[in-house]
Length: 433
Image (cartoon, rainbow, N blue to C red):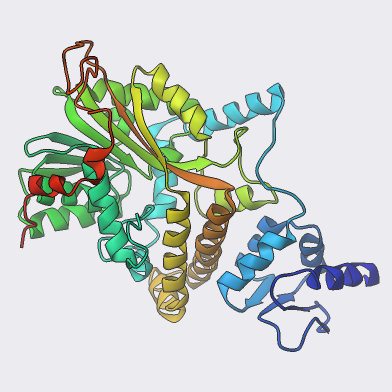
């Protein structure tokens, strides 16, 4: 044990903020005035700290084998330094790739399996999410068009940015795959006059959006269904399609079928926006140091990340043409810190809300898991270990004369001016009152 304690003391001296460690026997190691204090109940936890297994440390925290005192921002600065090596996977051999694909096939074998995984995450508690999301409950990367924006302003900017990228127009048939709590679907209907349909696998989200549709008087123009994307069989194709924060749940094995489904649902010449988290490493796989296992167990069972180059390959193989791709990675880091700070400021209320579900023990674990998930994800985006891409694609109609430029074969203008020009605001309809 003495060797382990000396190793811990050596690691403490190399950390960016002062950290103290309380050993299982009660002895304290480190500075008296520490910004972060880690109290271990088991010696195995100290081994994990010494070897940089921060995902396993996170599991110890959730399971009450480790207590943490201090700000999450400080703890994540410590966690990043504790790593012995980059957690981004390096090149893997054919066997690892085959096993990864087999695991993906098993995790996403049926719509029912995916529905269970989605419910595990999104149906925790609407009231819990409302504590730290913006008022529209937009649970995806915000767009800080202006550095002075609040989270709520940046989320509205993101919603509008997506609508502009898709060139939404009054009367467009618009499909939102994975509609969440309805932020984009309702924004597109109120501000751009589309006829919108959203699908979700979360029963809580379905009920919430149905209430909003009724409250805002959008019956007949907007609808929401509890449905898997694989079950969509539409008699009429859509002009525009969005998928925001959803394709991370699709799985590597199902990615070709996912984009082929979008191709089928999109009318020739139409546009699709795929917005989602991507892997930081080209040789994708779950993050190392135990972080991937932690996310799989406590947050997103069945979640998989692909490098943007692999996503674009599957997109192209489906017959879609990528026309614009943008990396918003730092925007998601700031979004996640905003969520984390909001949750940290309301821990007692969060505990009460989660306790109201009837299982105090599970509620406490969920709260501890989300505290680490939000702050840890912010750190991972800042470090570049994961990323966020918006990919706009068209379904070429095969007619060279279509579009603003000959050969466009779609409504995409093949320049970016329309995304940023203030003139697009003239196409909006005023929000419903």
